[in-house]
Length: 74
Image (cartoon, rainbow, N blue to C red; front, side, top):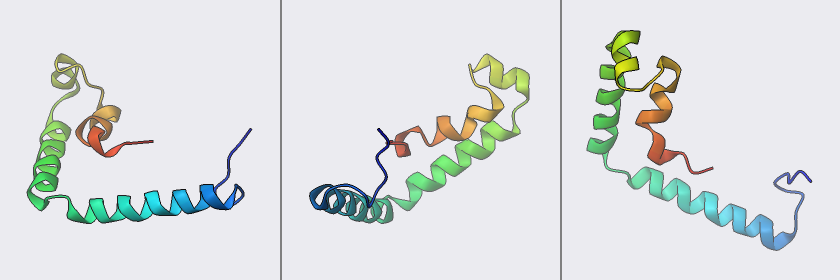
């Protein structure tokens, strides 16, 4: 069964709205220096060669997921 937001029960829709609301608030409160550090790490990893990334156990297409892994909560 596929669950499409807006088609469920009123209680579930309200819960999803509340989760999104508080998620947005928390995203705005994230420390700017933490974001700057993540962007710096992203740029550093993107500048590495594929061989250097392989030595770190990373693929180039996984850099963003690796750097922002704490932001993924699906």
